[in-house]
Length: 202
Image 1 (spheres, one colour):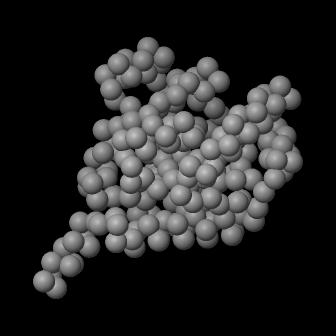
Image 2 (cartoon, helix red, strand yellow):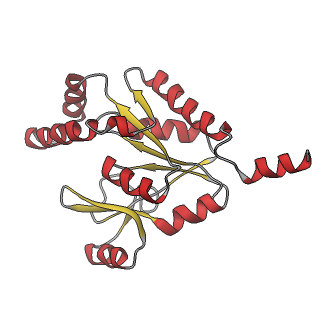
């Protein structure tokens, strides 16, 4: 496979989605994988852009058919990544970015050892709690669940190749772009277009 597979992981509230969206705008050559989920759409979410929204029965049928690269049950709802779409994009020499949790990342690494794992950290646990509270989306009980989940996710941070602390948003964007560009230039990740160029010099 020729494309690079970037897997971005972060606890809820660390700013992962905002960073990913900023880098996708700056690096149009990367294609974002749109996950499948059984949860209901939230206000403003669009089918096919934010998620593919499916029924629980449909999702479980896709699990049985082996359609997912990774999947998980999060707070009672299923989330999963299309295996066929990812494989087709990488075979087509396209870079792909996944925005998933650490458990999903480990499932992906088992199938794609070459994946580039990137973990986004908040600057402190206190700042993470402040951000979750400031969003105004969750009850105090839900925030405590997210904080417990964050501690579990962060315990796996050293399993990733790159760690970015999202303290200053502009700096974190630059760091994420640097990872993407360095990976594209690595000789250990040969690409179709690079092979064609080298062939011209032989």
